[in-house]
Length: 125
Image (cartoon, rainbow, N blue to C red; front, side, top):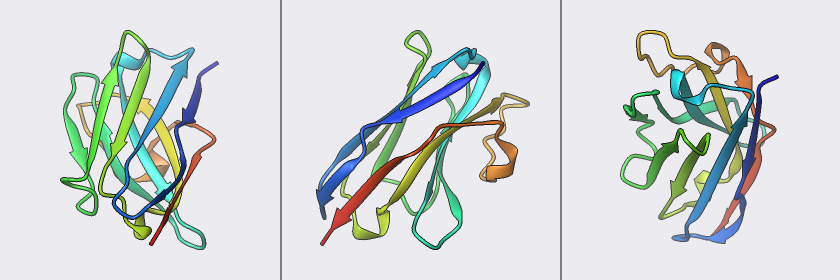
């Protein structure tokens, strides 16, 4: 059974940093596309960024230059380093996974098979 467990969320002030982790189990991380999504209150779930099994990365325009995605296949963990946080980053952040087909990092939530329970990030001004 595949499980994804996020951690690292919290409350910070504008300009602060947080590092989220997504630990996987029952899952071959190295052959999967992993991604981060987030959902603010009353809004749809949106793509933050993703990484293929070979390490290719894609970011949403809203986080480019501020967020860094990495993965450790040996540790079965994906990370999201969030810097220069803004109130607009306030949301529940989710990690997701899908089989790596053609190395495509989809920005569509429906394309992902497995999801974590989410971790809340709150940024105050």
